[in-house]
Image 1 (cartoon, rainbow, N blue to C red):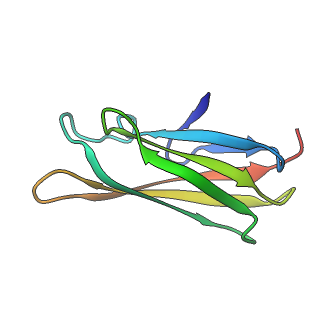
Image 2: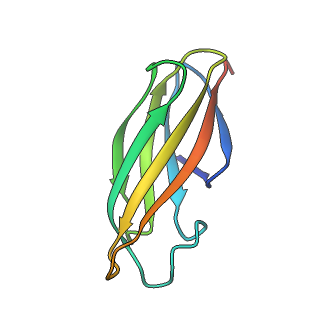
Amino acid sequence: MSTQIHSGGQLTKDPNSEEFVTVDWDIEHLPEGVTIDVSDFEITGPDAELTFDNDDILTGQRQTTLRLIGGTEGKRYTVTNRITTDETPTQIKDASFRVLVQQE
């Protein structure tokens, strides 16, 4: 199961959990009929303990996903998803959300 998040949102993650997160670009105002060609994720924060893998563009090419791993207790990170659309000319869009790492 995946947690759906939007730009500006925050989720709380246990440092020992490995959780899938989905960015729904319909919510982020991706124009109708436009799909995602490229998706990249970047994590910034106080250290490099929060990592990710399994990043992908989901079926229908209007959602992206990644699995968050680790993190330092009590620290806050920012995850940014940068996409490139299939439009001509293409658009590059960012959506960022925060991750607070806390023991659950």
